[in-house]
Length: 301
Image (cartoon, rainbow, N blue to C red; front, side, top):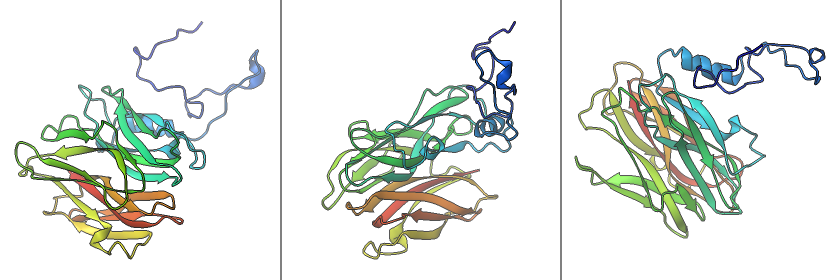
């Protein structure tokens, strides 16, 4: 009566019980007494697929948050979700990514890894994972779809042992020096009583004379000393040169210094992007003690 097509023959998503496209039928129509819901609103999956099939001005970037899968108070070590690209690419694009928020318990070591796996022409799997006895309440990341149009962009990773970060107390920063046409020197540092077992970072690079792009870094140190720690930190960073129009922007955390007797809670966000600059926010919450935090940004049109 029905022909079942495989995903290799159609462009579709996994079954979504909350989709507005799901046909409704009552439970009394079935032999097992199970029907389908009468959905009247677009589900999150509907919205993602519509954005994928009918992209406006393709953003070339996206985000993933563990809160899309579960509430913060039900921590799990493994958090994965399939993400659709803003469009279908001729070949699988590169997907550099970086953390944008962390909420981890202080009782055990800080362990978190962010990764993009199973990358195809139209989708990939986002992963935010912890391991051992770490309590990962929530985390988020941002990613860049480095396909055609980003030929000038070089991407790479550096890791002490090919993992992201595992830090005993909560003080770490990453940065680059000695930049030239052949490469650069990567630094991943800790200080004071922090014991860093493992750490890693993603890198973006482009020619210094590349037009319509900008990048830079900012820190809570730009607006206050570490000993005057506060939960809310915000400022506006100016681009070296103004864009002709409002650029797209991707940001990621590059360092943090937190007290070890309270949970590590850190969120990076922006409230305004203009052709001349971006307003950033580095926030902690509840009883977390944030001495400093830093992030990097990449802007393009």
